[in-house]
Image (cartoon, rainbow, N blue to C red):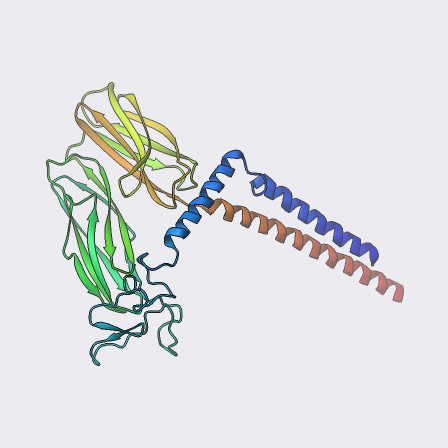
Length: 368
């Protein structure tokens, strides 16, 4: 029995040793200098965000500890409601009785969930990727659904794409549990330059705001080039190397020509973070592998890798999207570590089971 205990302790020790070695190899306990800087920058960024987005009156979010009496700027009652002792009460008895402006509710069977926020809504589309030719019209529809406990006054606006986008409505009341649709119309005149344009459709209320990312890939009716951009790895960390493969097809009659080629990383506020450029010579087809080092201060979210070809005033462009996820590396290391631990535990169980079977066999032999 004592020998068996020693074996168990030995296997546990080996298991812990394997875990520590794998973790050290993966980078949990021994970050490179660059990883340390990235981790430190990420921590500082998280602290900064917590300061900006924490619970305080005037941050634009009606939190659990605020109400319409204590912080009217964040928890203002919707149209048709009056604030009474911190609760938004319908002006007329015929109106649907909605619960308080706190972020919890105590209704029973079939009622509102206890975790339902006071003010919230969902969007049917987080992003729109539009490809169209100059002189054409395109329409998309975005649905909004009120997921909170209070009506919302929604203002709709467009960022960076006003000359291409028109809306069928710019303001409306989104009632509790109801949905409303916004039609987004895209039109580009023949005089516009063919290019990739980015922007946002913003849905703002005094309590909560959301947006839909938009990419408008505007094409010439008779382009001189066809460009295709493909990001090789879609999920990255700040400071990583983003790589893309760009294919360029010469659709014109002139061959073996020099073209200006530029590429960059942008967000949906049309901010460029890093860029590159070079002169290329193309005959009929050219394929190019590109890479850019992402800044360490990038926040989580969606970005685009943009590329553009220009020849004597004629241009063609394309893009592909990718995502920054701060915690993806940590999750990968955690999953690998858990798998290793589970394998070790399974091996120990099998050994103990086999040991027990051997002892039972010995006892049976002795009894005989």
